[in-house]
Structures are given as C-alpha cells and as structure tokens.
Amino acid sequence: MRKGINPAKLEDIKAKNQYFHQIIVPVYLPKLEGYYKEGLDILKICLESICLTSHNQTYISVVNNGSSREVQDYLNHLLKENKVNEVVHSSAIGKINAIAKGLAGHNFDLITISDADVLFQNGWQNAVYDIYETFPKAGMVGTTPNTKSYKDYNEMFLFDTFFDRNTKFRKVSDSEAMEKFILSLGFKVFKPEVLKEKILSIKKNGIRANAGCGHFCFTVKQDLIKSLKSVVSNHLISSRDDAIFIDIELSKYGHWRLSTDDNFTFHMGNTVTKWMIRTLEDMKINNSDLFNLKIMNKSSCTLKIKLIRFLVSKLIKSKFIFNSYKSYKKLSSKELKDYYI
Image (tube, rainbow, N blue to C red; front, side, top):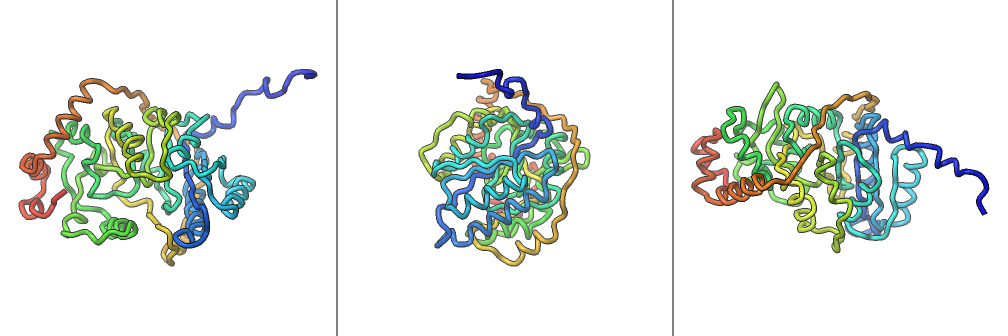
C-alpha cells in the first residue's frame, strides 16, 4: 500500500547540468597476479591523473568489468570520496559492452573513452577543445599523436584537405613521446627515422592538429557514438570489435580523425616505472570551470560520404597515387622513399 506521493516524482535531475564532458574508463583486472600484478597500481595512477587534470565540469564514469574484490573496493572508495561521479559494477562483459554501460543514461556533448592504463597530462582538455572549435569537422580527437594512424578510417580528411595549403607533412613536435608510446605497446622503435620526424597535420588560426587518432584514449562528439549504447559484443577485448563498433561506426559520418599536436597522454602498460610516479607528482590540480564551447553535433551518413570514402580508400591503396599525394603534401624525395605508410 502506498501513502502519499513519491518525492522523486516532484524533482528533476539538475545535477548533470553542470557537466558537459564525460570520461569513461572500463576496467578489467580479474586478479592481481601474473600479467595483472601491478594492475591496481597502474589504475590508481590513471584515475588520479584524470582527477587532477580534469576541470570541474567533467563527469567521470568508471565501469568495473569483472575485476577483483580489491579493485572493487578501491573504486567504491573513490566514489565515496567524490573523486569520481559514477562507478558501475558488472561481471566480465567485455570492453565494448562496458563502454555501452558507461554511456547509458547520459547525454554529454563530449565523451572521452580511455583505457585504464593511460597517464593524463595537464592541459589535455583545453588542447582537445581547441581542435574541436578550430576544426568543426573533427569528430574524434586523440591526445597521443602517431604517424602510423594518419590515414586509418580518415578518408574524408584526406579528401577535404587535398587542396588546403595548410595541410602538409610537418616536423613532429615531440618525437621522444611518440617513440615512448610505440615502445610501451611492445613494438620496436621507429624505423626508418623519418616515421618519427614527420607527420601529416593541418594548421589554422595558430592551432595545429595532426591527422589520425587511435582508440586507446580518444574524445568524440556524443552524436557520433550514441549507437554504441545499444551494441552487444561477444569478446572481452578485441581489435576487431574496436574496428567494427568504434572506427567504422564513427567514420561513416564523414568526420575527421585528428590528434593534438603535443602529447598529452601516455600509455603505461602493465608495469609501474619511476617516470610515471614523477609525472604524477608534478601535476597541478585543475579547478577551472565555466567553459563555453561551441560544439557542432549534427551528423548524418549520406551517399556522398559513402562514395567519397570508397573512392579515397581505393586510391590510397595504389602506391604510385599515394606517393604522389605525399610528395604533393611536402615530403621530400628522400623522405618519401622511407615513408612507407
């Protein structure tokens, strides 16, 4: 038997109005031994760096994807201390499904999706916002530039900027950070050297953005990723799922994939090193707020976009045609010989 009116019916959800940027971190640490031995320490550095570097209008969601009891207790402690806004606990449902849970029930202008082993740097959000405001066609923005990703699912950028004189291969701003990222993934150093020296970039009004964006940490406009709320994946972690549900889904709207010129996020892997601790200790707390961003969120998948993407994807497979493009975009003859991607 019910008596009276439920007070919740008389209240609106107003708390979320103070946020416009959501960060989703799916966490999978089933045990703290073997490969995952230092996983909790890595996670702590990751989340602490997010808390320190993110402004007050950031909504932090952590999705526990079947992690151990120690990890659950740590995440609950963060929520209790109001360091994060939301903790979702689930069984091991997989990365894509965990991201979908983080998106559910929210409608923020921008969403950052990050692996749980990413170390954020001060200024990363401002750098991302600069790109979105300067280049309205940007749909997905990364914070770790990588020369090897400039053309991946980025056909519309190559097409739209073909005649743009401000789009060309330029010197990499932080080649050391780029090489550190590649090494952190377990790959060998860049060979030949030109791959860590030159990157395709666009410049406008003093803001430079590099072509390409990976998905270990990226920010996306909410309307481009809303379909992810209803997807179902059958894998814990799968690069194929990342391609199907993130890369292909986002690219069909014709937006550009870009990354910040400077490196604002580091991939830590599964082992804590001294430089990570030092970097965290040197961070400053970001207490800024009252951002007034102009983010265009209207997107559509048209026949024109499909045809352009199809045509460009075929053309860049031709070594002669794509080498001609790279030469046109200011790679020297010597650089072109070694720039095999």
